[in-house]
Image (cartoon, one colour):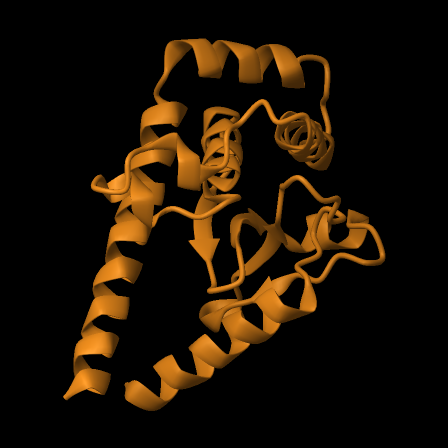
Length: 177
């Protein structure tokens, strides 16, 4: 009985975290000040990957400089925001800025970390740095995972625990369907 209750609690927490990340990201992407700043940041960059890299670098520097407070201390523990973890707000900000720049970006997360998935095409993959690991989805869709945060993670590369968590989740979803 305790195991089932624990699983239900974990599933509820997962849903709250997912909805909170999505809501924050959309609200930020629609904020006129953030949109204007994003366009100023990417101005003069004709290459799509250069625009994505500029946004990644900005968000990483903001997170590393403690411009964004850790999610655990941002709100009282009684609000849905308490479901967020360190790095979630940073990922939501990055997804919002990428959306404001016209990119197809999605906030995703595993138990280990939150990250942003950005859709890429075949021509983009050829221009990615050698360490980048494109994520292949059913139907041939390609995305690159970006993990902005306080610690440096190369663009397009998810740390091994996050990749393993994402792959195990895909296997369990495939078995369930």
